[in-house]
Image 1 (tube, rainbow, N blue to C red):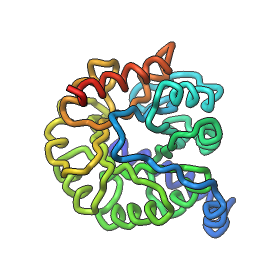
Image 2: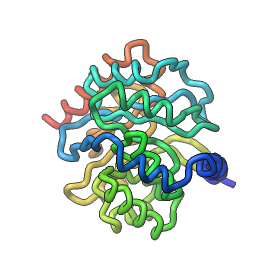
Image 3: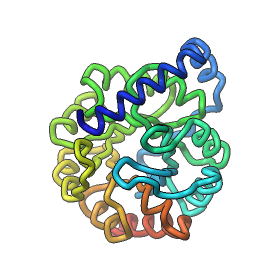
Image 4: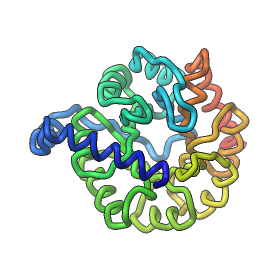
Length: 262
């Protein structure tokens, strides 16, 4: 199996355990009672989606984050366009508790970053205050992708549709995705090649907001992505390891907007 396949096996097992504790009907009711969705502005200037990320399969432990809300507050103070929160536990040491803490700490939109493969997870995301969810094209059939994209919209959430290839970009375009991520990490072997971004960015239709994912280590990488057509970057590792994440978010944002102004 690929790394993605293996992760999804664990995601499904953990999901079934939660479903046994809390049935879908109860999660749906919680989602209906959740705080209103915060809209992610697709037409905003270049921005950073700053991630709360403790570890990853490729790099292992990244940072000790005792209070994800405090970290998210620093990101927001630096001008983050949204906060991404890993909620997958086995490989990323994330949790829905992290999502709760971040949602309570900031006013900007919050993305539930997980491997979404079941209707239950979307209602669960909304119940915990998520404003955005991630849809990975490689993890879903075209029919599932369309259905989940529509489900997220019906719950008021925006879906970030993640692509890795020309075929996946075409699939994202076919379902009418307006927020499309190009992940330069290969989900089969976890290698990163930032050169993958530009050719896929050229395929995006007008009016689409493009997010560059993976491969950001500094302002130079942000500048390169912006020059290639990115409207935002999603950054985790570089920010959680930075001694001043607030300043880092501000500098990344400035780098991207400098290119837009030019």
